[in-house]
Length: 395
Image 1 (cartoon, rainbow, N blue to C red):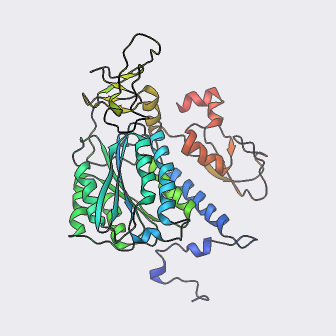
Image 2: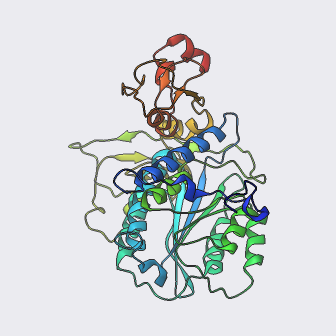
Image 3: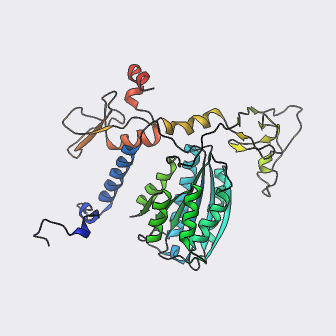
């Protein structure tokens, strides 16, 4: 077979990742894995285009495997603890990039699904629930069907303009379900729920089926850094489902009123009125007041518990809509001493830089790290932003 340049038919559909991974001078594989991750990020960026319909008000349920398989130590210190740490970072980044969206969390263990956090837009509340999971008992098998049904029961009640998503993080190679999971997959597809899966062990056929049928993505991690990269793929809003309707949404823009030291009576905000935590349920004089019913809240964005109005600030909307107008993709070109350094970070190019990245608008040259940073975090080309003529054209 080695002498024959032709491939077997069954080999043609597989990427030979073992050929891409090479040891460095010290015998480590980290450099190769990092290069694979960087190339994958570039590939994803190339697929992004402007003028694309996206689901901006996202409602995402995270299904977390808490079965016996999550006690494995192939991720340090264990699969569960590594996942919880990355989940905290993901939740913070998710709400930073999608401030008018909501997350809910469901755990799967011992053949059951348990909802530990309802759909809400409060990042601190979710992170607190995630932190409490490091003491949970890892027993039995997960039930993928029960978890999907629990998420679907909440998601199908949402209005037609809401984006409905499920993200499954599963370490088990088996699932113990009470019925036919393909019926549940059909229901997800019918309701327009996009289901994506991140596997921590190996590829499982039913997970691939769920992702393919519902328009989601399915990936299996290589290591913890690859895990973080796959998780953060889900920060950006996905293309809107075909059944997602366009509609006008009523929102309120309250102004913060802070009258410390005045005669205004002390009141409690609606977001902490049921809280049992003494440190958060304090009487204050300042806050954000709903413009419709004048209920008080201590933070934004939030849905008014009295009248149901979505309360946001203008920066929240601005951060949500930058996904609709992404920075133009850079062109990958061979490095031929076009410039001696990266325009953004001023790093000097060396012999190891075989490819550099050129903005098609301003023609400035960037390194791969700045290319990814511009498109994932900054969302504005530094070269175009410092040239008023090209900046006005692109906007």
